[in-house]
Amino acid sequence: MVEISFEFALLIIEMSEVLETKRKYVVAKQLLKAGTSIGANVKEAQSAESKADFVHKLKIAHKEALETEYWMDLMKHSETYPNPSTLLEDKLLSIKKLLNKIISSAKKKPEYKSYERNNK
Image (cartoon, rainbow, N blue to C red; front, side, top):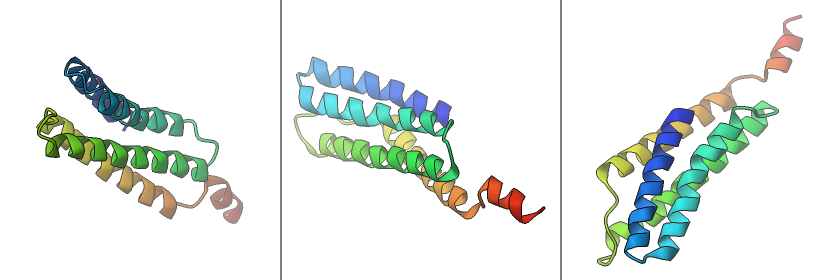
């Protein structure tokens, strides 16, 4: 997940730079912030202090993915903006699905400490 979100962030940087060359600064900045924040939150979740913290950070990453999707949808539906690439859209869809799967799996698993206590 860390690698996928990192690769996606690199694509977002490229797209933001394209938007800036077209003087679409506001959307470029918003897309850059939301799209790169996904990976930052996934990376941060890797050193979460608890399962709840892990899930919380991944939920933030998912919210950022939804915000990124919003900015990309605006671009697709505006005649004066370039369309995001299919690769960008496909990667975002994969990230959203993967985050949903990890979040729901993590919620189902018992906390390690409580598992250890119950099996002594």
